Length: 308
Ligand SMILES: C[S@@+](CC[C@H](N)C(=O)[O-])C[C@H]1O[C@@H](n2cnc3c(N)ncnc32)[C@H](O)[C@@H]1O
Image 1 (cartoon, rainbow, N blue to C red):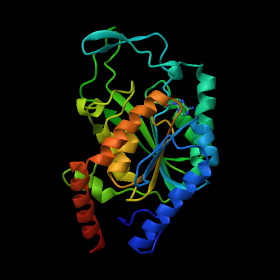
Image 2 (cartoon, rainbow, N blue to C red):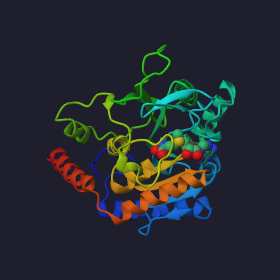
Image 3 (cartoon, helix red, strand yellow):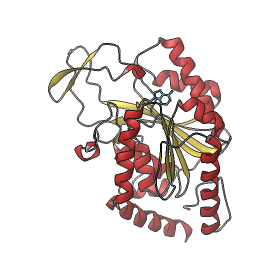
Image 4 (cartoon, protein in one colour):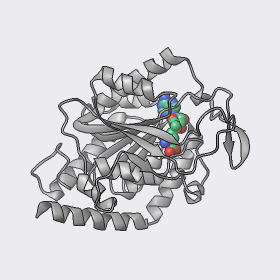
């Protein structure tokens, strides 16, 4: 533990690991659905379901961090540009708009369930474009979340704007919020600083779209880069914390969480995307990723500096 996670304090590392392992197993048993997939070491699990039903069975106050990349509801016949070609932005039926009121009702519903299952000091990150991010922010305010940051993810090399009637869309917003105003959230400040050449990390993150190696098993139409999720996991959780992604898609969150030694629960209602998730998580199981070793070293170094 780096000492910033205030949910469990003053216990040995071994006891902490045992508590978290027990807590994770308990949550999985309470979900009560057949697993779509689980890693052999029991640290990552996938469910095929509507995330709202799964969250109803997760014990309140049991999840340390949630990353959610919900449908943006932008698949309405528009065009975009990919690899120099004009392509449709339609990502699937799950992404078709149902109108702003219905979208807001949906966002309020799933965010409320997230808030209920977060630990008192747990946090949630939600990514989105202008199509939904204002509804997400408003819903969070209505529900009493404490908004901590709005991260501007700068995509560095975004596709050009074909209509030439707008600026090129080069950013996505990620809202980071704590469960309530009273939360004492986990922020691994020193680690973030260390990863940023010993300078305070800002809320503008320049990270490229997923690399080709992240798509070797196929691609999800809205797949997030692993680097983005690694940063999110490292900033707001400690080892063995429990991370949930209710709209897991190809499980970029799962790859990052598993690689960094956290527990993971991923939910999606689309089998094709879960099949892709399984391939990616299997690859992680088989291969010790160099990032893991590197981060282990940095985390240990930061822990040493902070505890002296
Ligand atoms: C924006 S994508 C997430 C992509 C993911 N972040 C990745 O890196 O691959 C949203 C996902 O939510 C899923 N989805 C939509 N509605 C859902 C629901 N009610 N419950 C669970 N999953 C849902 C879709 O199938 C889609 O894969």
